[in-house]
Image 1 (cartoon, rainbow, N blue to C red):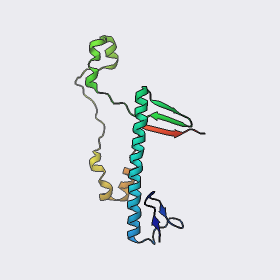
Image 2: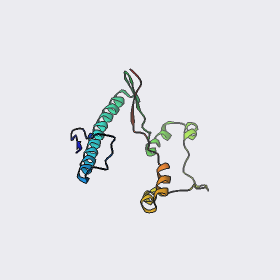
Image 3: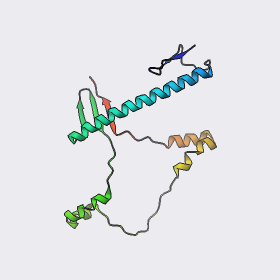
Image 4: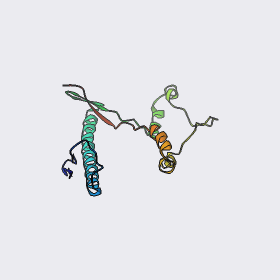
Length: 152
């Protein structure tokens, strides 16, 4: 029968990956081993990303040099607007008005809104057509650190 390498999570199978002949126990072992391996790899990747991010921060950079690779901090910047209030004390109003709009009331058109906490449960409830629509409407944002092989 087919075995799973518990060190790498690799399924040691012959043929084309047809698992229809596997016993439930072997499928469960393979699934468990793969999930554990994926979790371990994700943890290692997280540590590497943290080290890369720390190196960028220590240099005050958004990129690192590495032959054959492009290492970029793709993180979305988030600002604490409460701290930006201090800019009003040191910059003239003419400069502040270029970037700051004080709180005010206005009448606006509000776009359609979806409560995804509820929508995410619909595919199980309402079937494949709903699942397809939800799946195609989903975008996964990139991680904060991207490492791309550029050649050599």
